Image (cartoon, rainbow, N blue to C red):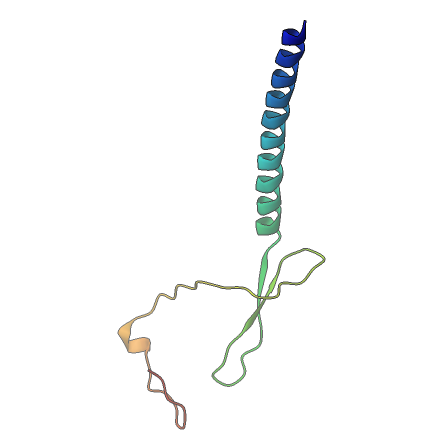
Length: 89
């Protein structure tokens, strides 16, 4: 009789682990999708030679930091000399 109770415990534990894993996976994937779907990029007005943008995440808490990898399609003729007194490398 004790053997049957042990099997029930093992089956229940395995079912709980599988259910918890699936719920965590679905919740995490949904949360990532939701944040990406609500991510907004808004260019700010240019100030001299400097440009900036704001990134909104659609959530109640603001973004504290963000990294952006921007690809610019340019030609060699698009590159100009750095205006004085600024220096560039």
